[in-house]
Length: 361
Image (cartoon, rainbow, N blue to C red; front, top):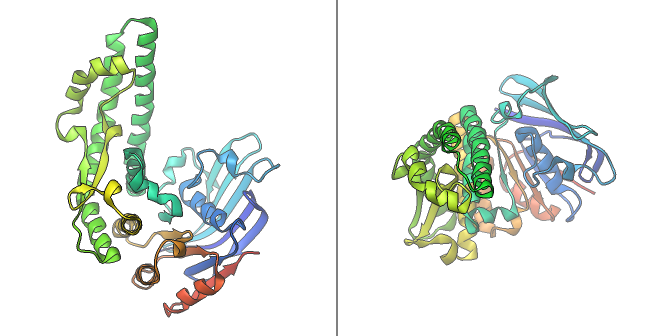
């Protein structure tokens, strides 16, 4: 079991110095647009992932005109009391502490506080390129297996080095085959680990996605989800050999697990070109609930669920079904935001569960 009981924010986004106590498992956050509802959810995400859900740069999250920020949270993890702190110093250095002890590698923290975030713009997972679906998959698996995250970081680092080398070959108009083979060799082990983990894990995740889509959409349409990888066809070492000429010409690596995708179809046609707005919303929530369920199955307890502005995205019936699943059928802590305090209270009171509403002014 995981519970966040208290959070304090200093110079984080629009919060100069503010604290919140969370007395219930279900927490509603109401307030006008721009008041800081999403920022509060993002601060919770920071304590789970050591980074923002929305921005790649930590500096973007410092309150305007200030230097650095501090987020601190009091958690209960199973029977352990945990105090987690994320600090961005004035010099731009970031620190993350677990009960006063700083991590040497932030990646060691990932998975300690499992969490799922659902935001309005997450539909890009469906509508945009394969990179978005890989990011979704990697964020999920990294919470389950620290070795996967380590290998992913390693792969991306070597991939960047290989791409730089290919560019330098073009600039110098000469090829160092032995150096290229060294980098090829360094890519193979992490690539094969990641590929095998994704392939095995998706046999579990894909049926969950399909099941939740049918529940949420209430349709009879046949949805298909398939793992697509070049490594399904051939060994990575052989792919690198065969693709070398193209890599040299284009000055980048064109084969590998960084090309993997989740191919989603509706009645055997591409989902993102055929699906309606409602079908896209249904699929997004199916992906997120499959993520939630998978984390719960592996961890033995429900992850923290952060739902941002979802009342605007689902009709009343689908919203009720979603809240019934996450609030009544599961025992995880849920934080959800809405601009309408009355609508939020009405939806939560219908669940017959204890809840708390924080009204931001």
